[in-house]
Image (cartoon, rainbow, N blue to C red; front, top):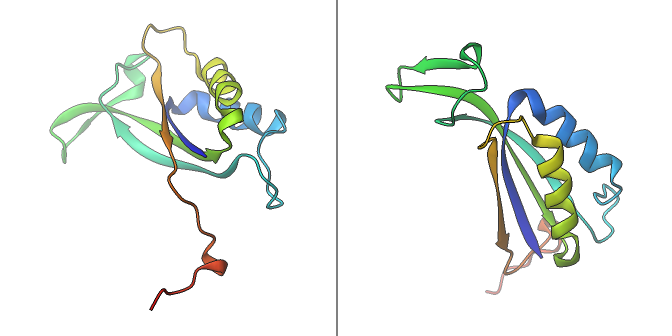
Length: 118
């Protein structure tokens, strides 16, 4: 299993979610496939598409943009297709429009199935 994390400009996140859902690769019925799709708001130091996107963060003492972090877990065989879907839908026309990271999942245990070893 793999975890995909993608940092995406806010004005592109709705299109990315739509593309992932329309791909049919993400399931909500518990069958194997892409799952645990989550979107988390984050502040980033990425270059803004335009000046309206930037604001000054007093907490960080930096100019930042608000963007979204998309997270999902998928089967190894789905990674390339999901990365292509996310990358295509997230494009802004900038040379650096965000990043997609892929990590190995060592183990996944459903909370309902968790049992103490003691």
